[in-house]
Image (cartoon, rainbow, N blue to C red):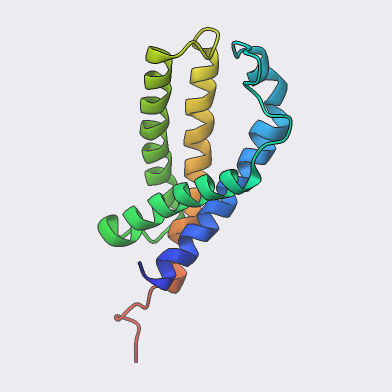
Length: 144
């Protein structure tokens, strides 16, 4: 993994972390909890921030790897579109698997919310990841 890919992954992870806090931690906290089947001990009093940092870095790393090594995405718009699609599909698959095997949510509303929010976060983080990759990629056509 190159330095630019790592830098882009960290930038994307930071975006996922910040948006996750703002959207799930502040805006939708009570809404999502009200649509979750309540089990004793299901929610921690304090989240594990190391685990949160690691999974957000992993999401940023996923987008950075795809964009840098396979898709050659280097613009905010391209990254936003690809990030939204990738995170929509990953989130949809995960939500459907969880819905199939666990009694965790009440109805499909929280599933829809999670998929749409994750796609939005993927769009913003994907745009940032691609922009960072674009800034850090040497363009041989402009070299003099």
